[in-house]
Amino acid sequence: MTLPADLETDAAQLRQTMAKALAEDGVLADPAWRAAVERVPRHRFVPGFYLPADERDSLGLTVWEPVTAELDYGRWLSAAYTDTTLITQFDGDEPDWTRPVPRHGGAPTSSSTLPSLVVRMWADADVREGHRTLEIGTGTGYSTALACERLGPEMVTSIEVDPHRLAQAADALHECGYSPTLAVADGLYGYWPEASFDRIVAACSFRALPPALLAQTRPGGKILLTLSGWLYGYARVLLTVGEDGTAEGRLLPGTVSFMSARTHAAPAFGNPDHWAARTDDDGRPTAHSPQRITAATEEAFHLRFLAQTAVPDAQMTWLGESVLLVDTVTGSAALLAPQGSGGWEVREGGPVRLWERVENVLTAYDEAGRPGPQMFTLHVYDGGQHLQHPHIPALPLPRP
Image 1 (cartoon, rainbow, N blue to C red):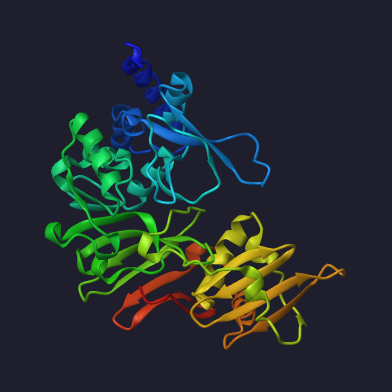
Image 2: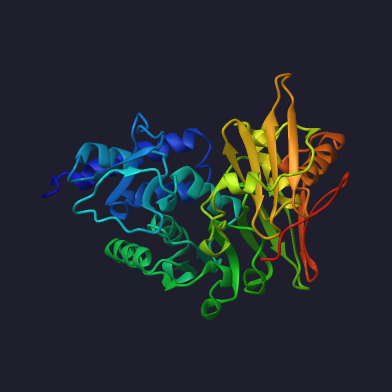
């Protein structure tokens, strides 16, 4: 298909409209970032992506419809300038965008993050002119292009673990006139050849701060990181690096999630029924409902992250109406079943009482007055990484 001659004119108008809407929402308070959004052609970085269909398939799976200019020019271009995350890859499998087909279910492994979040990340990290910056997770390259517009490409290094993803992003960046330092590298180890950095911003999540990122940041520099785990609890933190090689920073408010760094992703755990059979002790009424960490609320989002610190190797799934916790490291499991009275009963098995540990965190949280994320501080030092609050026992993060 030959693209319409007025593509760039249409795209420029849509960019202006998107930038205006983001500014009205308070996202583009900084004129320099607004100018970057108005200039960077996002459509060049997303020649193909998936959008969810209105209805699920017969198995209840989300149907992801491919969108390209060839399939539907109008839908493709308008979506490119909508404040939406555009999924570009599932399960590490690179689509054939010349003959794309719908996907049924699957785990997203690459995307173009919604523009408001991209700008929010750069702004939250206090990225300004003169900062040598490392971006972890090039993805499509759109976020990288925004940083190049703001800082100049000579100040930007971006790394990506997927070589095919990086090659596509590099082509798009160079075609748009941007020439940052790009490399195929695992974000767990940063990028030593270009260190040290004034700012490190990760567009993926980690279970804890990787030591290499701390070592590659100048004293006084900042690291913006999304913390995650195998319960899919998330929190964002802005760390400031000290002269002594430690770091400290408060959690940031809001609900943001990123795909896990591939080396920090949860392992497959097999058949849930097999794990449920390991919960062989006598049941007891729960002190807290599992809905406190499974509900679609901002507090539950926050609590799931706090609970995760107590059981860092646990994963959670539904088994009918019951909730199952599985720990592939220790072989422990907990099965929570709803009772007719509206309460819940838990049966546990293995050396670690998973739900008991979660309950201890939830009780401490309640007794502390239910503090929000910004009331917690992450301390990173030679002996480990701990989340601290004045009235809650220190919550350790797993070894990165």
